[in-house]
Image (tube, rainbow, N blue to C red):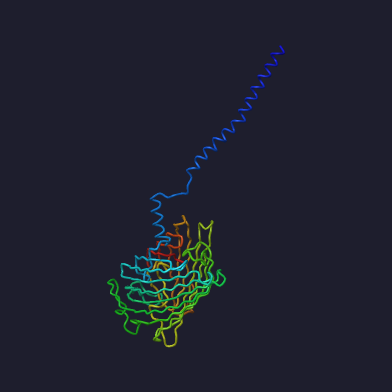
Length: 408
């Protein structure tokens, strides 16, 4: 009997030891299988490579949005009001950061622009940027509706002009921060001419000689300007600056002096600008505000030509009104937008514009403003806004705006 008991206990111990051994071996076996599978998968790992369709789309985006290729679109018209613009440019590096850009544009209404620009963005140990531009432009049917706010859209006449110009602008940030100081010099000649557009009469057919300052004139200007302000928008102190922003602000004062070499049409102008972007919900929503005041000062025995007066009405200020709709010696503008970012390339906005022009600086206030409101859609690239579409409504009706830049 004792033998049977001993034999049974021995068999039980053998079975228990076998099960314990299997339970210890199984996790090791599963771990080994998992590690082997992961090692096999690791052999196939590689950086993401776009397929042919994705690669083609990326090249198009680089050309149309980022401007990183040598050839790039140039959608800036010769003058506001020219209509849909077609253009291209070729940019090349002449050193590590300095570039030369040759570009031109054309509109179906005959507006033309040809120019060359040199940019040195990192002068004085990245404290300054120099830009030099030379070119020629022509506008064939610029609208003029009379002076002041009590004009009608039916009063429109057209004029044309050509202008050769050359300028140099130096912006300095003494501490590489928000504070900036800018100086610029431009030499140009405005040749005001008759317009042969069929839809409206030319300006000299309605305004007799001597009734409109600068009618038919060709003043040659030496234009100097100086600005001081602060700019806290992202990238404002970098080589690549966003022409749209989701946070920060810019506040500045700019003084202009237009010296007419013939001493007939010289004047001075002072502009006050304020921009503030207020981000909400991690910059998904942005409240953007803009205010601007322009004031002019005549020189002794000289007048401001009508085509150089401050104006309102365009795709970037009073958007429901045609370009150059209101003109006078001074202007005031206030704008507000509620922008919603759908993704990094697409944005929608609700906007409101208000402004007026005045003959006297003492009339600059927020009474009797012309207003508009509307809905906008913007397509952004990494550094630019190549397409903006705004639908605006004001007291003179509905307007649709196509532009190749941000509003402010």
